[in-house]
Amino acid sequence: MKLPGGLDINAMMQQAQQMQEQMGREMKEMTVEAAAGGGAVSVKMRGDFEVLSLTFSPDLIADGDVEMLQDLTVAALNEARRKVEESLKGRLGGMLPPGLM
Image (tube, rainbow, N blue to C red; front, side, top):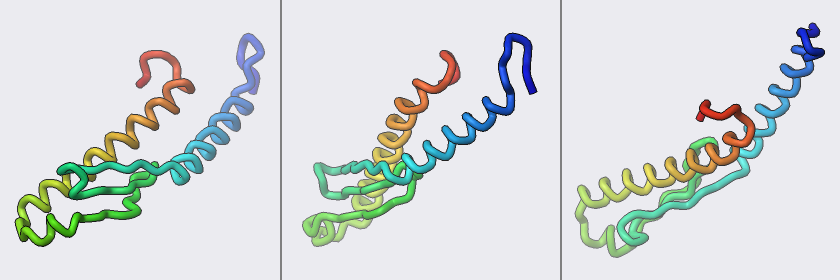
């Protein structure tokens, strides 16, 4: 279907689908690492927000402070999520019209 000005809506839709598929592949390939508590808890997360690993410092475990362990785990996970979102914004920002991100 051609729009005024010669724009082909079908071609635009195919291009958008290809871009979406490419972004999906890139998200699965991208990884970020984040830490909390000076590295006491570290997280490795994929760009599609799948957690690949969660590591605890032996010293943190030895202390037995469960509340601290929980807090640092949440902080590390949130930092990893923030890094993924920041990276995605950077990648998507160049594809979208101004003001949409």
